Length: 47
Length: 220
Image (tube, rainbow over all chains, first blue to last red; front, side, top):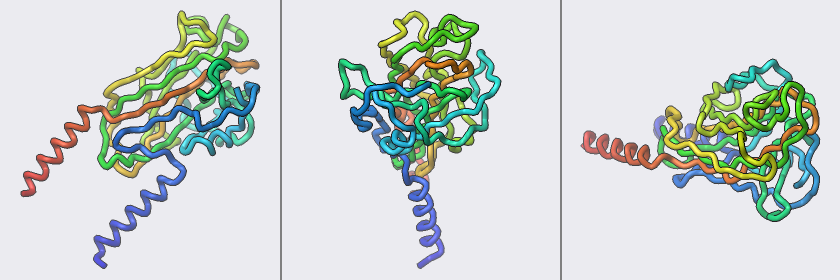
């Protein structure tokens, strides 16, 4: 395996690690409507 | 609306961080947030999972401020998996006024621009270098109610063709909805964020494609 191939794998791995737990911005962009939070509860937090 | 811990919200929304800012002296006329922050809050605080009673399935990410902290911030981070470096983006979100809160000392309403004792509404920033910044303000996304009914209105705020520098593939762009809370008498005004959209500026994509074609022809 060439040094260039190894370097490419390292770059890809580093990019994947950075992406863990993050939203993904795809060619069509990013959108979030927050409906995945669900509908439980009735009171606001103390603020 | 639901009382939800900030950690629960962060779990439900990948890439979202909710921060409490330590008490700081903060200019009412400035838009640049302090560079340093306290650690991410993991207890029940200002973040909440909200909705209007007439449409409970339509959830809204609420920000109520937090007692004892100078400001609060919502920070979604996203990885550029578009396949191209991006230099310009179109942003939009819905600013939702959920409740006004109590009047603060020095101002009749903390919610209405021009009549406030702390910065009203949201200031929106982005960073290509994570939460440490530097943060750049997206002026078109700043919003504070002026004449609107203070409880129960929703308005879409947008900014087109925002130059962001170079957001390379695989790297992170972080947004920040920043809410001043210098006068933190409880209850604070409760803001909401909904229907966030970030898309590449169409012209910028075309220019990138043309640039790629030109580079390919030069190589041939």
